[in-house]
Image (cartoon, rainbow, N blue to C red; front, side, top):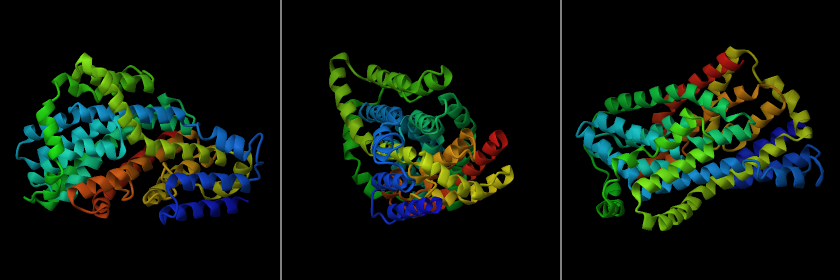
Length: 428
């Protein structure tokens, strides 16, 4: 039975890789098939309809709300000019010094990455940041990678990500936060090293991305209309982070505080109502794809945690899972590429199901699975040519996602290695 479930999972990976089915649909189909194969009844306790679909779909509801609030805050950063002002100020400060401009854009990308991930974060930092870097001589591939590496620096402090791992792995937010703080230095060092090494290794290229310039008249007219955001409004991305990390406030109230701070510091009282509704509706549009994915992930997690699935998979998973700490680091470091191209270790896909199996079967403690999953997430968020932020950044800079993957993968692979070493030393 366990072999059949593994074959079903392999078929699901093939369907996602070949794009026969969208990831969310493939995960739901996979969950239903796994449930039937593991002997679950159609209705009742531990059943396909009542347990997998009914209880699984809203299982990550807290994560979905956090995603929506993060997207709402991201739309506010865009509409109020906060993100654009941050990038412009950094570019003005860097002047014609390519490395300083790139490091500044990296810092802004990290700030934006703490608020919202994926393509919205790349756009907020990259619409101005990528053309500015190219204009001062940063190679196009390096410019696109700088945006992505910056977002990766912010990922350990992205509150919706905390909520996702807390809910999916059934861990307290404090535990997730504690490991993310340990992961952050690896992401920061790798990102700074990327900018310093790649910008100097490739040399200065004094070219301009004409495509990027032509696509920016809307941003320029908005700047002329609104002007730069007030200096105190530029603290908006830090507000939720300070509340959640410094004062240990819950994630959803922290994000709501960021929304209110952005609104109050940039908007006249008579315009607040319209801006609130407009940006909220815009946030729904941005949040719809990841929310759909999290519905599917919740369904898959419910399926792999069914008693029949656990009993069938436990002996197989135990046989192939390294128990020695050194082997744990070596094996899972070598398996890093399996989180690319929506592979089986992508935590926002089948990897979530594998994580659920590892915890449900008792192979590793949940905190060790947390360390492994978050380490892989650092790779996926930057180097996966199928992720929306990678595709957008590469295309906007005028290069291919595969070129960006080749340049960034060694650095984020090192981040994953660091996270796995911390995991093995701390939890195994």
